[in-house]
Length: 341
Length: 235
Image 1 (cartoon, helix red, strand yellow):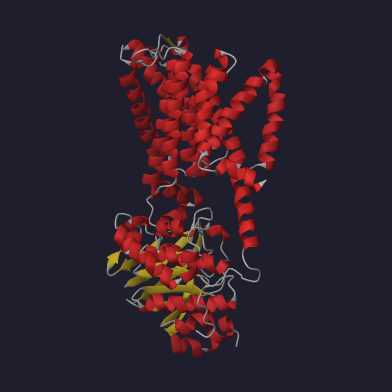
Image 2 (cartoon, rainbow over the protein chains, first blue to last red):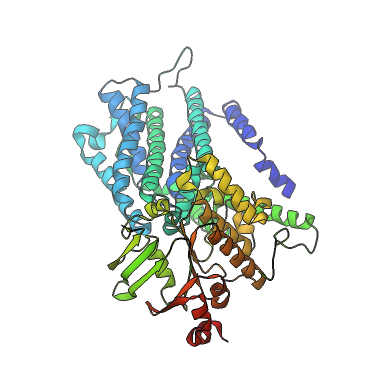
């Protein structure tokens, strides 16, 4: 069992995963499946952003869906209303979400724990209201149509589903790669130190505010980039994109996958998107199945699928290591104990 | 080096420190004795900047430091090793230690040298450097906590109950290491309930009760003091 489990944590596993993703459009039974998978990838990018501020840094941000919508609207407004090309608009969408993230972060991160969560919930709702009511900029409830698809090159046309799938996959790989680098860097460990406790982090000399704002900006940039990709795939967006419900969808993905793990956001998002898809025929009754499923997961896997798996494997490996060690040798061996110091 | 003048700290309407005045000289090892709830941790958190005094002043070499951000104080060399060995359990021993060098992250050469010194002080940690800190025994976790504080390059090291919950043999070893740290030139402020062991390595000591310092004296005076023996040594 342990050997079987090692297959998942083996370094080659991620290449197998990538190969599966690359091959998926060729084995998918319909274009619709490819489309659903591309959507899942885009949401996963946003969930990776949420994982930075909430998973690694421990600050429950309930405005994440709002920043996703900001990225989507920035791209939509610039390409549709102002005739920008896709790539400059895409870059601008990322920058707008980052700048807005910095502004919101500087104010909201003065609050701690649930006060921060409540504040950001309000921020998310304000973004929704602004998008819904500021008709001069966002066209209000009518929404924006005619959003540019990413500019292709040669024979590659990103307005087609399959090429777009690979574009989304490319950004997802980039998102995961950066998250992995971050998690293993001193900056990532700084975020985790803050998650372990403000006082502890401060007693190591960590500037709380600066690092929290940085984590927040990184997360909103992820959200903005994902939102911009989403807008260019759907080609039509409305205020519903900013509905705070999307934030809770993303928290569900992260909860099921595992907060603060590298592959939790991917497993959670892709898994839940496909479960909801396959229960589609039940219409609203699918929540009857989905709700209890989440309750069971939270009770038996409080650290999510990936988190629980990693914890289980760590325990098994430690047991195996203890079994290998000579009996009678306790943890203090090798220290110079001087009883009469 | 460190000087407190009539420092008061309140939690709401409760006054946790009532006009505390004390000092720690350069290179001194000063012990703070007191029962649970006497105000030891509050006093430490005030010196390290986690709490702001409502009255009085704290100075470090004549410079006022009360009200400064904790991260600034760590930079100035005031480093606290918190009670309860608060490690990052999922990170490896070495990652925990490297977080202690957070403010000196650009000085990689200096950090490597410090890491070697910490490993020389606690050889077991080098053997376990890649293991998650949460898997270590209590004594080893305390070593990581002290090692992490040393990586911050303290001039004044504050240790809050380092012997708490450790086996007697390990406690002796811990006090031996604290003496070595002090002899290498770092001032140490040590809060302890294990009064006898702490006084044996101390230069001076204060006794705190109900938020006030009620007694002060050098090692010999404290060890010989009847009240101290009764209350904290039990002999």
